[in-house]
Each structure stands twice: as structure tokens, then as C-alpha cells.
Length: 472
Image 1 (tube, rainbow, N blue to C red):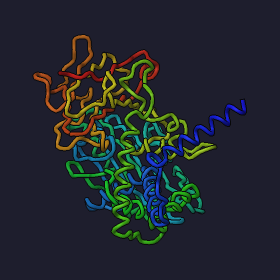
Image 2: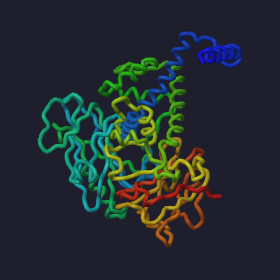
Image 3: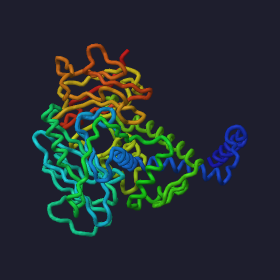
Image 4: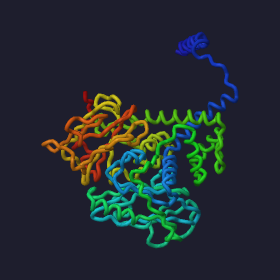
């Protein structure tokens, strides 16, 4: 046996030697070439690593462009249209966002009113890397009673006063993305939801009179899309310089030195480095699009039309992606390249399922038309919705009249058995315009079906929905 192994190794060596001049020969790289190649790959890894914090950096930029800053609150007074360009949003709730900055021994309060008969709220307070800290609202820690959440900065060493809900964080910057849910979108219920939003406030613990201002951003461009050039790294390094650094950051931040970043210093790459960083950003973002097309297995076993929206390591680690043996950077990157604001507890207030392919297994094309059959008796306490996204960016398609359809829409045409056919594509089917979502990109599409107030039937297989079928 040993002789046979030696003969095989020798034969392999001869084969490689004989072919190397044509297939694997390579001139040794110079030192500068090695350094350049290493910097390129490390820049790509930095894009994967930073997916969560990039969303917060871009939210701050969007807030500042609309006249706000840290601790101010931006909100939608009406359901979102396509200009609300955050990752995988919907148009059936009113979004409320704020980027919050604390300093040593200077806690900040996020005050949330109790839910009412007309308005519910759900969402999560998280740190700048979008690590969830605490869920709020009816499915959160205050159980709908409201409360004063006290954000305690990384090096806080004071005493928490009575009457506050302490939220400990490793970072200097926090973030929230809440959704106010009105009973309906009628004039009275929408007004009640807006009044509720005005009672959400952010202020320093020691200066409650310094409340952040409220900015209505409905129908204003609010863009949170990863830059496909070297400016990605400008946003990244700016927010890192404002942040507390924790131990698990150190390896990646050390790798970032290969393309000129030093924590606390201005980032000034050369023209040549900017060209390399642009290539790295585009390549990494394109990789993530491919990685997320089939992010997880089927939601219902044996029914491939719908996928679980994230890998199991997300919800099993409360979206911290830290286990005893790893910091799951790749899975985390996949999640935060297409979603924002993961909760501590997935599925308590909502449940999502994802479609990126049709029932034949082909990627969904924005220039093609599809039909979806939603069976009757969707297992929900509140409502369901279907939302369309450009798969390249994971945001709403631009310049579309409708971004989603929900059971709250009064114009939806149902079948006699209570089921409904929904249509997506560049053109509406005749007579079914109220059941149609427009897709208008050269890219592929992806869809999220949301269950608000999900019941057990969403997961146990007692209610199943097939995927999209292509229409001629």
C-alpha cells in the first residue's frame, strides 16, 4: 500500500511539473504587489465586517442631510413611498428612527408612551453595529406600557435612578428603528398615530429640556444604500472614529491599517488606494447579493418557493452572532446587507418569509411578470403584507406607485374562497391593478411576505403558501 501511495505522489508531481508552464506558472510578485493584493482583500473583508455599522452611519448621514443630527427623531407621518430607501422597509407602518450619541457618564433617555387602542409600536434599541439591546412596545420589555429607557454608555459608573429601564451598551452610539402601527390608515387613526409619535422623545438624563427635534421625512429622499465606491470607507472610518472600540473589533481594525486607516485619525487614502477601495467595495457588495439570494433553507419543508429570512445563527444568538467558538462575520454580513434593525426576539411581533426565486427555481426578474396565490385564513392577529425590492440593493424600486400590498388595503380583490391572487411585474394585468405591485429594474426582484401578529400556523405547516409562478 505504501508503495502505491508513493507511486501516485510521484505521478502527480510529474503531471504538475509537466503542466506548470501552461497552467499554473506565475511570476513571483514584488513586495509592493503583495501588499496591494493583501490590502484589496482586507478591504473586502472590512465591507463584510461592517455591514451593520454602515447602516447606522448612512442613517446619520440621511438625517443630517434633512436638517437633523444625533438624538433627533425622523419619522414618517404617512406610510412610506419609494423614497424611503432603507433596507427592506414596508409601507404598512410608520417608521421612527434616531441615532443617539452618549459620552462617559452621560446617559441618554429614550421615552416611549404606552400603546393605545389606536396605535401599537414595536422595534428595537441597538448599538451602532446593530447588535440588538432591547425590544420595545407590546412585544418588548415594557409590554406596551411605555417607559423611559436609559441608554448607559460604555464607561458609565453612576447609579441608575428609579423609574428607568436600564439599557447597557459597549458603545458610544446607539440607534433605534421603531414602527408605529395604526389600527387603519384612515384620517382619524393616522392622526392618532402621529400624535403618538410626537410623544416619543430622546434627551440627556441630566437635561430633559434638551429634547431632540422631530423631523417628518415623508416623501423626502432618505437613502441608506451602501456606496459602490471608495466613499464606503469614508462613512465607515468616520463612525469608527466616534465609537468605543471593543476587543472583537481589534483584528479587523488592525487589518484596515493595510489600506491606511488608523483609529482616531483622518482617513486620507491616495488616488491609487481609492481606486483599489472602489473595486473592493463593488466586489464585496456584489458577492453579498449572491450570498443572500439563497440565504437559508425553505421556510416550509418541501415547499421551495419561500425561504427563512436569515440563517439560524441569527435568532439563536439574539442577532449577536457570537458563540463560544466564533464571531460569525459572514452570516452577520448576509443579514445586515439586506435587513436592518434585527430584534432581540425574532417573530414575537412579526414573522417574515423571503422569496428570491420562482417555483421553477429561477431568480425572480424585475422585467418579468409573476402571480402569487395567498390562501385564505392567513394565520395572523393583525394583518399581512407583500413587499417588493430590487435584489441588488434590497430597497424599494425607484419611481413606483406601489411598493406593497396588504390586507389593510380596501381595494384588494379576493376570490370567493377568501384567497387572493397577487401580481408583480413591470405592467399590471388588466382589471387587477389593485392586486399588482410594480417592479421596474434591470436587476432581479426579491419579496418579503410579512405576518403581523403571527399565529402558530405560520411555522407549524398547518397553513402553507406556494411561491411565485411566471406569467407569459
